[in-house]
Amino acid sequence: MTRFAAQRRVFFFEEPVFDGEQSGLEIRRDHLVHVVVPHLQNGLSSAAVNNELHRLVKELMSQWKIDHPVAWYYTPMALNFARDIPAAAIVFDCMDELSAFHGAPRELLELEAELIGRADLLFTGGQSLYEAKKHRHPRAFAFPSSVDVPHFSKARCPQPDPDDQAPIAHPRLGFFGVIDERMDLALVDAVADLHPEWQFVFLGPVVKIDPKLLPRRPNVHYLGLKAYGELPGYLAGWDVALLPFARNEATRFISPTKTPEYLAAGRRVVSTSVQDVVRPYGVQGLVDIADTPEAFAAAVQRALGNPPAGWRRQVDDFLSEMSWDRTWSAMCRLIDDVAAPSTTVVDTRLHTPTAARPGVAPARL
Image (cartoon, rainbow, N blue to C red; front, side, top):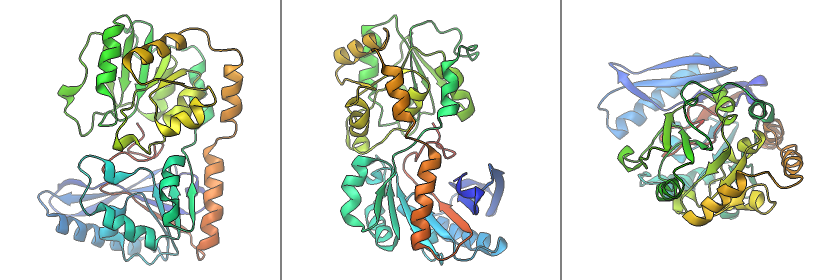
């Protein structure tokens, strides 16, 4: 969205905050993007919430003279309040199989079918999700998450540890991201038990699961949410990066952005057999794949050693074909093919039952 904002106005409609005596909009600028945060009263029914959001969207469009924008949806739930936006084009950017997540709204699948029927373009956040959705829309395109190589490659240079990570011994095995139902907590606990000398570092919020379920061992450390700009500093102090995802419906179609980010940081990576990590990263030998505690621990042990000959060059060659600029440029061309002239993108992502594409606030981690 920051790249789109260099060409046209972008209004990024955030999750509502229930903290006011009356409804209103907070608007701030972030890298040229207008970030719009609706503030609503506590205690509103679902219908009342959607009515208020609908009113606030109309107010936004009137105040800022938004006429026939590109309406960009990350979640079908936004149709409940944005259905009647007179759009030059509608994009459904489908990042996950949201209906598979715990607590997904019952009407999500019905709304998804409606949104796919309305959309001019269907984008998916990974190859496996594209293969599952492509038959449902004539203009479906896969856009796996890319990577900001210059940003994450900072981790390849020695640098001081962040204060909260500095006391943790080596070897360090790290993960950044949302800690939720997609995390294989039993696997983490078992590997931490097998190797008490390894230190596990987790950065990110705990969402939709009871924190009491998290592995609690002396060698497992939860350092909380970190800003995007801080991540290379933490990565620089890790010996191996982890993708310990569970194999369940919630992870069936995920395409973790952190995979190329870890690689850009120069870290060896060990992952469970998530489809979009196995293909292409596992197949090309860029990431080690393992599922059982014993196999995962063995893969980490290998990753703690010297990388195979040519591994870093192979990583850099692979990453050279990935950039957010390339993704943005391809998306722009497709939008221009279907849209009437427009100067605005209204980006709606409300009531999504999980984090969406990392790189867009607030769900970066």
